[in-house]
Amino acid sequence: MKFLNYNLLKTLLSLLLFLGCTNAKINSKFLNGYWKIDYVMHKGEKFIPESVNLLYDYYFIKENKGIYKKASPLINGTFETSLDQTSFTLVEENNNTYIKFLTRWDQWSKKISHLDSVSLVLEHDQRQFYYKRP
Image (cartoon, rainbow, N blue to C red; front, side, top):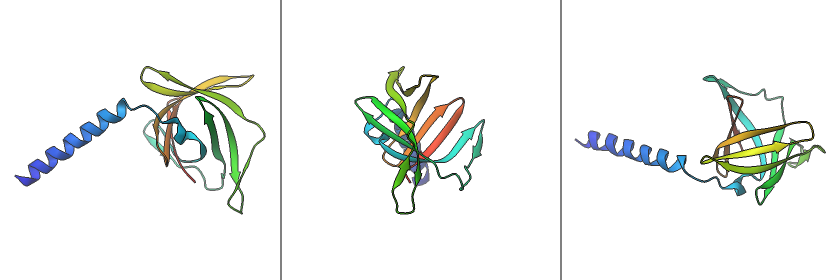
């Protein structure tokens, strides 16, 4: 009897967590800072970046507008960022949050599937990019 109750409780908690997360608004303050790609999912396959690639993504956002840059870690624990930067805005559409990038040559968007203080999941071109804090 206890086993049945435990499984029922576990199922109900999972359902509540799922329902709570699907309508949860993204807290954009967590986007600020450096992010390292942990892995990429595409068509059910997991791709792990080579360890030689030491580039990170850097985001800075204020009032739904921000900049995105590439950065590389230095031996002293700091980061060196590129001079190039891409502007973006955060946009809410159909209960989803998107990062909309704009350059002189192109524009594209990435859906934020998950964002908290230590992990980020972005969706773009049928791929899911799983990030973690360095």
